[in-house]
Image (tube, rainbow, N blue to C red; front, side, top):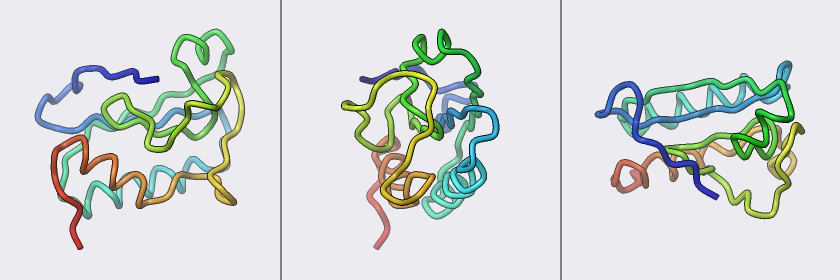
Length: 116
């Protein structure tokens, strides 16, 4: 499922959304990885942090757990089998998506090859 939207507010920058429930234990690590990924690629981002507090909002946004990172509306990891709703999300044994998955998603969104 994709929630692709036009970049906001700067059409020259890549929109990255971090969707979280209040008190998410993976929030800081996720935000650090997003920042590091964008910096490593030299990409300007429109970073939106969206706090999800109600089940209705989770359903409206197709929220599949906290933290979720979407680059230009696409989840950085396959979430097709995950149920929508208020929940925590694990990435293997971690509480945040990998820096590599975030870098790949940003690079793909801006049409830039990954540096070696």
